Image 1 (cartoon, rainbow, N blue to C red):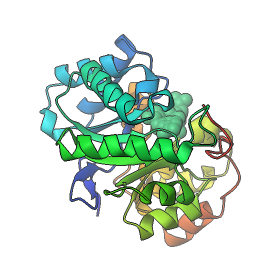
Image 2: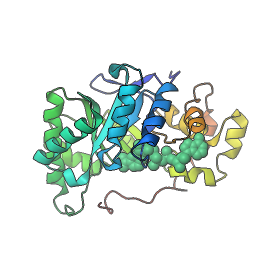
Image 3: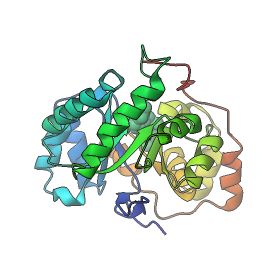
Image 4: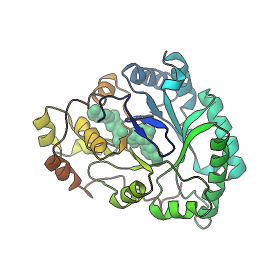
Length: 284
Ligand code: NAD
C-alpha cells in the first residue's frame, strides 16, 4: 500500500523507485527549473525525471545540490537523446549528462526513443549498440537501473536478442484516455516497471469533462484522480507542473482510493485522447 511520495515500487534488480516522479519536460533551464525542483523536493517528491533533450540538467543538478536532502534519498532519471545513439556516443553523452547534473551516479538512464531520425532501417542495431554501453555503465556502478522509453513490445524483443541485462523500466505515454494495454501487459509479463509520461495527457485531460463527476465524488481534482488511477494500476506517473500549488495538489493523492467501478469507468475511456505520437512512425 503506497502511503506517500516516498513510498516505492521495486524494480526487478531490487532497486526501489519512489512511486511518483516529478516531470521536467519544457521546464526552462535557469531559475524556473531550480526553484520548481527545489519546491517539489520540499513538498516530498524524491524522484525527478529529466532528459538531455530537455536542456535543463544543469539547473536540476543545482537544485539537487541546494535542496538539503541527501543525494542517496533522491532518485534521478535522465535519458539518452536520439542523436547520441551508438556505443561510443552513448558513453560520451552519459558523461555530459553527469557533468551537467553534477552527480557521481545516476539512478535510472533510459533510451529516450526507439527509432532515431536517419536510422529508420537500422534502429535495431543502434538500440543494441546503445544498450551495450548502458550495460557497461550499469556494470561499472555508474547507473543503478537501466531502461527504455517509448518502446513497444517488438522494440524490446529486438533489444533482447543481444541484451545481457533486460530493461527494468519502460516509460511510455499513458493516461486516462490512453491505456496502452498491449505494452503494459508485455511489461508486466517481463517484470518491467511501466512509467507514465503525460499523465494528464499534457494538459488535454483538463479540457474534457470525462473525470469531473468522479473527482467531485471523492472531493478531489481531475489531476488527483488521474494520478490515483495510475498508482492503483501499478503504474508510476510523472506529473509535471512548475506552479507550487499544483505541485502540492499532485502530491496529495494518498488519502483516497478509487473504487473498482470507477477504475473500470476510467479504463473504458481508452482511445479518447492522446498525443498521437507513434514510436514506429515518428522519428526525431
Ligand atoms: P503532463 O501530462 O504532466 O501535463 C503537464 C501539463 O499539465 C502542464 O501544462 C501543467 O501546467 C498542467 N498541470 C499539471 N498539474 C496540474 C494540475 N494539478 N491542475 C491543472 N493543470 C496541471 O505532461 P508532460 O510534462 O508532457 O509529462 C510529464 C513528464 O513526463 C514530463 O515532464 C517528462 O518528465 C516526462 N515525459 C517523457 C517523455 C518521453 O518521451 N519519455 C515525453 C513527454 C514527457
